[in-house]
Length: 208
Picture 1: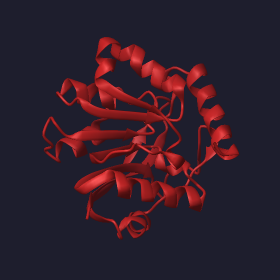
Picture 2: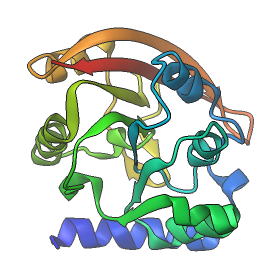
Picture 3: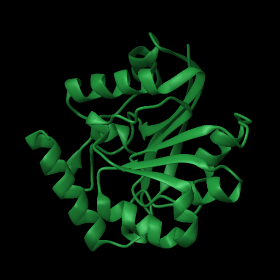
């Protein structure tokens, strides 16, 4: 593993060991917009779903409640993954868990939908960004979907003590348009548990 990856892993392990979910700026008991975008796809219960950089998100809880069980949850932090496993209890056996860095992730199969909420913007080096785009290009089925939520141009320049890369709709479309077709994009203010606003760009892309 590269040094930068090790440092990033140590950073996130410390965050998830020391903080409760409602102490994270991105926390949502119900990830409403992600769920709305996902449900609009009308995917069958047999769909294969990848939740990238999930942290201790509740997205997987809702997927399981809806009857989906071909779910992979990935995060760089084993502490985050363990928190979700503990929360889910026996339901955790129905999920495939991956502790890997999204900048160098190798799922080894193709998915009908790849979900990324508030993870992509932490990739700030061009090599990491391009590697991630190659990964989703390989791992999303033809006709499959990429749901992405990242800081917009009006979003913060740092988060959790790390710099971030902010995107306009045109920026992210230009990065993905070789492999994906844009379906929909919106911007939205996320109200953090502390009452502050973070402006996000939510998009759905379809794999060509």
